[in-house]
Length: 162
Image (cartoon, rainbow, N blue to C red):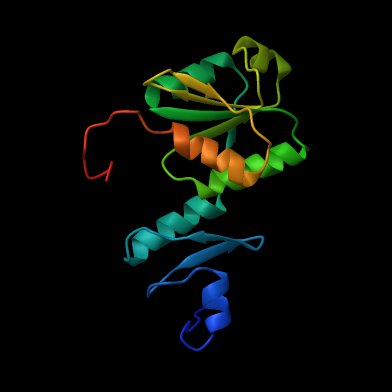
């Protein structure tokens, strides 16, 4: 944990986009993630636990994926190689996006079972039921893909939606 007075260290406040106070940022391998949750000790600790524990879980069967799909509005699945740059990129995105279940499979059979035409598939219980990522595999592109497709086209206006 560290504390920085952005009025004194203006170079860093500009570099990391600090425009209001207090601003909390968490860094993983040099990548900043802005904290937007509650301000109590328990809320901050729970958020940090989520960011520091594995954010994607390996699945090995279609039944596991189907159960996750039934229990959650959105499930994002990575199909690919364990030691690939794409999986490393995907893992970064899983830590940056909230309110989504992320899983991965290194099984070609499972990818075939779901007729995945790309390495990332977003399953959802609304609209068109699934989206396949088809862009250049960068953190920004994958994150944008998830954030664009994780909400229904039309939704009830609730506090969570706001």
